[in-house]
Length: 616
Image (spheres, rainbow, N blue to C red):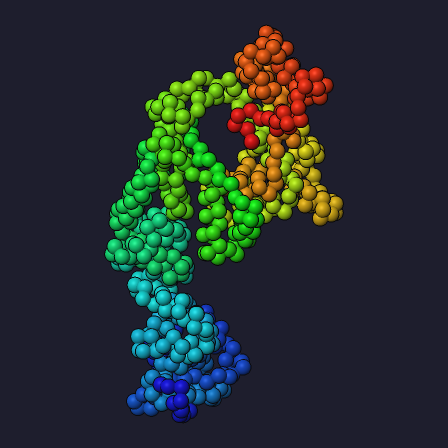
């Protein structure tokens, strides 16, 4: 039936005995209570809307639209023996007759859906019948007076197995449960999962997991790394989740093979650069603890220098990248400039060191920094690639570090505090970072410890030489609210004004700031410009008395740039440990000692910037 076809219908009255329900009517089952309720309404107010049907043999008609009304009228006829006398219009209702069966079926579907919402299962089946007879989505949408998007969603369910639609019709599963079954291609598995889901104990996600226990989703890092196109080219099978804009990749063994092949190829490419070794890590991150990486030597590329013009261009591109408005060409230019800053490894470094290659949780290939294995350290030192470390761990081949682990922990806390202190300068950045963390799954790289996580920033030496912003160290009283009016307390808090509320939020965020991954930390540091010496000065109590005498002698000589046999150095070396610590503290805190020693301004600046190795 086309849009231009003119429908010629006729009307006629039929006695109730000559009327029956047509199989075309999608509402085959109607609750008795609904019939009785409608019958009482018709008996009191009459039938405002006529019913529609298709004429049959011997002056009969089958009702395709108005089946519930027909049931109500027959209920009244059985209940009231004088219905033909008291309500003749009900005993002989007017029926609009369709010219043909096609028109009658369209009326059946359109009238029942538009007048009173069908159960979703009935609606799905009605749409499916029209589609099976050649009805387009547009035609079905016009017939049912709904939008095409709705039709598409229902038709996606029309091909579900009958048992699933029957369970939906019986309200044993929800509509979203039924939609979850569209991912299945195995009838046996479908029926098995359906039986388990009938009691409503399965969520949509659990149904999909049960239907596709061995499949992976498009968000899996292996899929991202291999790419969907690469998987398709290899002949991998997929199943679309029509309702979640998701795809299931069913050939997991094939996916693993493609992943392994691509990672192997990447290792060969990196190995060709001249590294001593390149190895794959099949996890999505480097676990320093389990891999024992603290025993490895670390080799650093020599950083390159940007020209003034390149530096300005780098800052401009970085700003665009942070705003997510940088195009592909700009990203390539920024990457090239970043490569200059990162520097390059020499052939000698590559010959002594190696790399780990892995694919992170986002499916992006990553390469570790250059590492020297413990067994290769001596050769690397001999080749001048790796320097002898004064701070090597006790398990390394180098000498034991003069800085104890407890002191190292304190220094790390000081560094953390310095970064938090600097972050307070940029409240907008902290709030942006919070929004970013709350809207992204960053695994273990969250910038803030905003759950129950404590972010330590206070060393065991308390306030010795350490002065953070008071917003990080002086908390207002936090009363227990169990027995108080929390609502009133909150109203009072809000009355202090938006500036106070924002200040409290910023203070909390700064105190919970712990960094994120290396790239995010670098971006934040570039903005906030943390300076550990701004908040911490080495003193006898917090540092010097906690290291050995020989190490203090080396610090003294190095800061004053004196030879080992210089009288100032030899005299210092003869002091007791406590005297050495006090003397070094004075060098850092007393200008008169610096003057007495004749320390030039350049060395003063160096002393004012000095930090133990490993601090930022």
